[in-house]
Image (cartoon, rainbow, N blue to C red; front, top):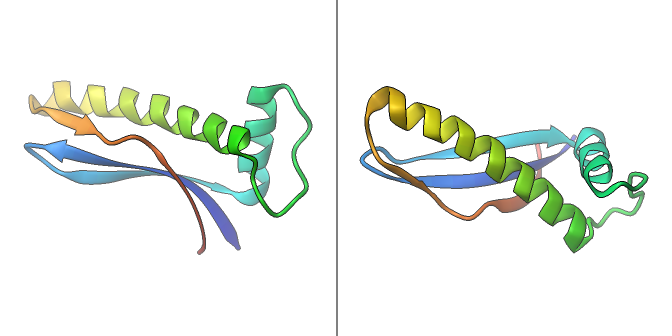
Length: 88
């Protein structure tokens, strides 16, 4: 099955990668909901759909990262989000 992911790398005292993963249908439905549209049906995602999903991943990942940095008392800096699709 094709997966849609938003990936952020973390740099700082501890490094790592955060991956928010959606199956194709749920990723499209979330992007459509955020944009106030019906889900797209083409194989290719529009730049606006990708941007909406990237921003969602950015907000969720940074919220989690901020809680983690408080818990472990370490600095972490996220990269810009990357939209990736692959089979898994």
